[in-house]
Image 1 (tube, rainbow, N blue to C red):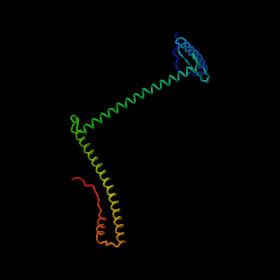
Image 2 (cartoon, rainbow, N blue to C red; image 1 turned 60 degrees about the horizontal axis):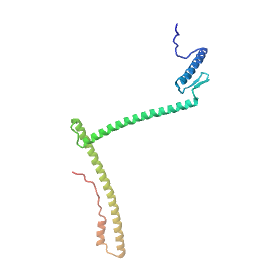
Image 3 (cartoon, helix red, strand yellow; image 1 turned 135 degrees about the horizontal axis):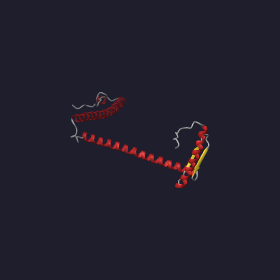
Image 4 (spheres, rainbow, N blue to C red; image 1 turned 30 degrees about the vertical axis):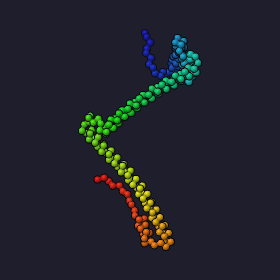
Length: 204
């Protein structure tokens, strides 16, 4: 009669659990030793019992086996990261290439090219987009002109004020010298107070 199948779960009875641990530990260490000898493999086995007692086996030095394991694990992890990073960059490149192609196609259509494949709705949307773009360009152009005119008006105001001050100094000097102010002096006062304002005129 064959042996019954053992259910793999924790053994509740502490005595049976200890007996099983002792037998299987010895069998595991024996198999590890045989594997290292038969296959010329570096084998390291570390076992802690439930009472934290240590049992181990190493075909060479346990430290050498652990160092070799850590090095191999790090290289494997780095390799996986490189593969994952390469896939991410490849996916990102594909998305960017598709976006560039879409933008180039939209640019050609805005320039009036490759319109044969567009239906009426697409053409209407393109026309609306062009009108909105043109409106934005005109608004930006008007804003630039307005800013430039404002700067020129500020300069005009400054020059006007300087002209008034200079005329006042000239007239004061003439008054001090006893010069008649009814002639050329009056003309200078009129010219000094003439004020020019610039403004943007919208096209008809």
